[in-house]
Image (cartoon, rainbow, N blue to C red; front, side, top):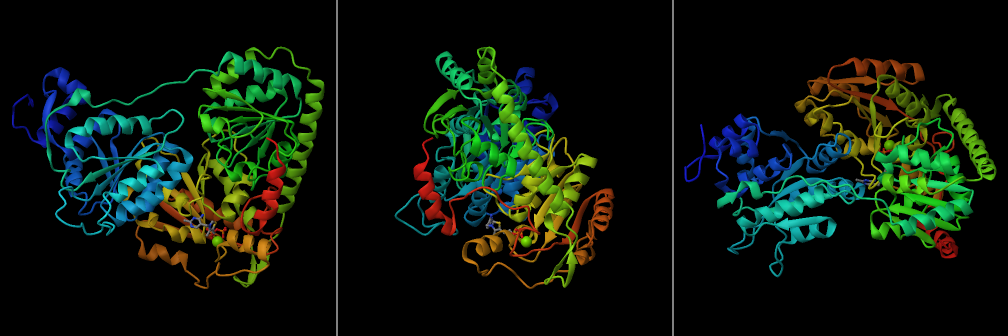
Length: 628
Ligand SMILES: Cc1ncc(C[n+]2csc(CCOP(=O)(O)OP(=O)(O)O)c2C)c(N)n1
Ligand SMILES: [Mg+2]
């Protein structure tokens, strides 16, 4: 078959020849597909994304996106794309984010109009704050002004409010003119595949525009996936940075999310300069856990050792960090810093701190160039610094070991002794390491404890959504491993509060064939917030519930789900994890955990400061005194 110019070919015909040839370009080259085609906007979007390698669609269709849905049907029938249906846009957005974050597979999400996009937009916060590139495709209001559209925001004095909201949040394109498809795909690719500022690109496609025909669309003009690698910082700045490294001998490297793919460069810089490395909530595993320069996580919810290194250092090397409050204790993390070397490609991020030598460029290339000009460094005083850091790391390990040894504690909710969160998470983390599983940690005490407990030896063994701490992210992300080409076994560790934000994984995960596990740590409260309330105001308000859910019974009503009671002891939990893991599908382990306002038994504790609640006044007073 061939679909040549002037023929009245259908979408089915085009999809068939593209599939037979193995791609749009190949079909055009083979002469079976015309370069200039008459297609609907909906089909044009599918073709445009195909040229950028986007073939997976996570969808909740509605009256706002039926035309796009039909184009997806045709291209899926031809084997060119895959569609995955969901039950909640927030949880779908989380799964879509994880597709790119964990598996590096860029996907597109499709929502209807009004409430659907608004929910998906909310979920997109996780990709915005973590710099994850993907497409969101939303239906939008019709463009002829025949009257207000149902589900739109009733404000007749304004046009297309949804696309303005997403433009503020990240980047959007309202496709008013069908022929502008090419421009939309160019801008979309630039955002989604941005080398250091990737994020969601929101396409707003009015309902009346979706089925409109584009006559003579030039398929070869639809932009392909862009890729580029930046170079090193300038010679002059590298010289200035090298001089600072020679001058100071108590150095900390703050390895942020932007350093995750550059672990080797960070390690070499640390070893050469005697620097301690403090990780961020999103960069666990950048150095092997036992590496002598790895001081663990630093920040608001940082470790004793990570925060020690940050606060005692005289020179801070910031590597790929945007200095978010949890990463630098709301600006109070570096109490003794005299100077900063900041390595980042982003002009605003690189200049966040005062007294900075800004290395604007690629992290690995800049570190390489920096190492080449350091010369011999006097290691004696650097060794003293590193020893002090290592002593703190030992103290930190001892504190953690003591918490892991705590026996089950009596808890009034459960009316009996139950495991503490640190003990339970340690057991889960060790189990995950033994079976080479990825851990996905949800917001709350769960995340705070897990940050400190994980002992990863490489990045991407833990996904802790540190950008937005969006409750429901972990369980929703599990669904990504049913969609990915090369899935890893994932264990989503979630509090009861976070689980109930998005329990849709129980249907969507099973529908799409997830093999993975949810471990639900149940203290029947929003523990992290109860803890903040107790610490700040001495009173707890509206952060618990009294509904004793029988989670094990879920297996009876959800076919395909395997539920297990996690027990009351370490041994029982281990057995439950093993049983859950041996199931070839989605498992849920329900574990009661201890909670107490006193905190130091049930949690590992927080060792950093934070500009929130009634701590603000003191934090801001301290911040005013900082110089960097
Ligand atoms: C969607 C969303 N809503 C609210 C919050 C604020 N928040 C952060 S942690 C938390 C409580 C988490 O409770 P749970 O999941 O049960 O974990 P726990 O702290 O009890 O271990 C809340 C409400 C949030 N991070 N995300
Ligand atoms: Mg809870």
